[in-house]
Structure formats: C-alpha cells, structure tokens
Length: 326
Image 1 (cartoon, one colour):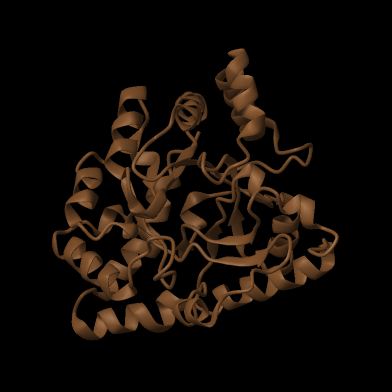
Image 2 (image 1 turned 45 degrees about the vertical axis):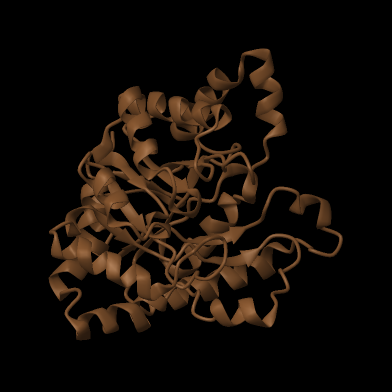
C-alpha cells in the first residue's frame, strides 16, 4: 500500500504516474507577501483542479507532489483537488536545500545539538500519524542538496530520512541543484544504509554528461529526468539535450530505473512571478502535459524510445518503486 492524500491505495493501482510536479509552491518568505499575494482556498482549489484535469487528459492517474514542508505544502488543498478529480496525489514530508530553504529554524536547533533528532521525529510523526493534525500521510520524503555540495545542514535531513526509511520503508525523492551531486547523494545514502530500490535521485536531466547518470544507476537507485520544458534558466539545459541523454540511457537498457516528469509549478504562493519576455519564451512549454504532447511523440518518431519503454517508465516503474512499502 502507498499513502495518498485521500488515503492508502494498492501500489498496483497507481497507473500512469508523473514522479515530480508541484500543484502549489512558494519560495520561503511568501508568507510575508500575502497582502497582495492573497490566499483564497476555493480559488487555489479551482486552479489545482484545472491542472489535474490537464494531466488526466493524458491518461495520468497518479502524481507525486514533493513540495517541501516550508515551500507551501498544503495537504488539505491537495486532498480537495484529488477528491474533486479522482487523480491520485502523493505528498511529501521534507525540507528544501540550504540556499533556498527556510533554514533559520533548524539551523538554530542545529547549534543546540537537537536538530537532527527533531527532524527524524518530524518525519516519523508525519509518516505514522499524519501531517499537522489532518491524518493525511506523506507517500515520500523529499531531500535536497546544493549546487556542487551537500552541506552539513542538508546532511542532517539525509541521515534522518534514512533512519525513517529503515523504520517505515518510505520512498526517498531528492532534488539535485542543477543536476549536480547525484552520485554524491547516492554515496551518502549508501553510507547511511538506505534501500536504494526505494530512492529516486531527482533533476538528473540537469546533467548532460551521461556518466553522471550511469554512476547513480549502477548503484541501484532510480533517476528522474524530471524538468522537461524548464530550460534556459537555473542552469537547465534545453530539451534537445535531455532527449539525447534519455535516448542514450534507453539504448543502454536502463528503462527500468528511469522516471520522467516536468517539475512544474502550477500555482504560486504569493504573487505570480512576472517573467521577462525572453524567459517566458523559453518556458512556454513548461506544462505538465508537455512530455505527452511533444517530447514522447518526437522520440517515438526518431526511434529514441519505444511504446514498451514508455509503459515501463510511466507505469511499471512506479509500481515497483512503491510495492514494498511497509
């Protein structure tokens, strides 16, 4: 069984799955801009339903929303969207990387020497009893590291997450900043005794050197090429480069260890960002149906992917990732 925001379901019933999309997201600090970036539950819910229906139109039955705790995770909104549409949604417990996370709270407690144990207690409480008194339980733990390093602050979360995984069997999903530190994250998780068959190293499509992907895959973890449509900013390569890497990995026989997604932010907390025209042009396809409407048809036509590999990536891999949850 795997926990969704509407309760546990059999992992065999996940169906076609997107591994990494954000229905609602805000960078820490958005709470200070709510005079103009207002919060209206019904309005946000309506926008979330629109996103869910766009995704469902492509045959997707399940979405993992790994929004970190401090980045606007709102499990009651996710639950409302799921109940209104029938889309399975898995939420997360976890925190963002040091550079863009809400660090002062646990940094203060880190100085007191209590932070890591408290992080572990938080993970275990949410996994076992639910989030913020709602009874809604996370399906994954979200972890993150910085560009070119895993800071000591971030290592606390990795260590606590592995302890929680050993206790509960939960899946770990990571953020690699601009595709860096994937192999290093894997090494750290191995050192701590993680079950890599229940680990997804995320944003690996930020790396265009296929050797980075192979280092992770050969250790037994999954990788997520999960930022399709997000290109030309935050160090993200163009989709054409991602297609070359994906085709190479599939040719090498790694379809059983790959997930694909977009990492879209569909509703921003606070005010919507105003993008320069040049950036808006690059992001015009950053939508949660982009893979199905443009990327996969192009790869099928070029011979870079097969229908069987698509089924493996979007359906079978999700079942395998979650099937041994305790």
